[in-house]
Image (cartoon, rainbow, N blue to C red):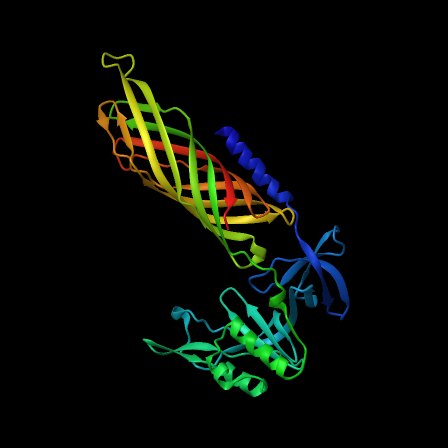
Length: 403
């Protein structure tokens, strides 16, 4: 168990040496000077206010911010431009929703992300709880496409959909009125409208999102492995405390993991759930009330089988195009199968609790993986008044991605 814990610490520490991926791009500073650099591509979920870069591919890491940069781009992937805009941050959350139809504009300086660049450009802002689209015609200053939910009565919400009117007035080529009326305030719908207009008006159109790498958003992994388990009980009576240590055991485990890759930050974050079969069987003998007239030998036996269901979050660190290391953390709930536990002549119900787990591993070619995982202690005896228990497991897990 100690060796396994040490292995996890070493593997997790190696994460800090994982290669950081910088990609070709450029930035334009406040003086209008364009500099070719390598920018750390975080595939930002929220529009950034700063970024890291290198002047050379293996050079020193530097940082720039929105204060000094008016535009930056990663080749073929994304482009951001600094603009001072009027933006409405009215909430769509029912608890904070406005009862005014009109947007509440305030001036802000932000990086806007290009979705479509052409005669009519579509730009996007995503903050912590704010998602807004902007448009620019023939290089004009971006204006927000207006969409706002608002209270009408306590039980009714209405929607200001002025963005449809803005599009109808400014994108007057190639857009069918019926298509516009059905268009939701979403990236796919608005992108399609701007592409239609640019194609109809005879101008070139650059759609950045089309050039993104194909995302693998779901993996199903079969994960056999070895468990190293220990079990102990403590009986706290009125006059004495007796502890029983069962033998450390090695057993087989098999799991089927569903992994969902989160669609931001370059596929580095995932959530997982892994129903797993496990078992533990051991016996122990202890001397009860030693050195007294009541001293006797007591045998204990446990035969424990269950379906564990760990779920949690995972973070990947890319070493190369074909290899990456990962760390994960989660919580485990346990569903016992046919199990038994006896101490002497007493039969005790097996009632497993939950526990936390932590792991680190390596994945190759998005197909083969190996992980070392440890779990915190969990009880197997529920809420017995005088009896507590401590079940611990560390695992070495191999994985194969089915799809």
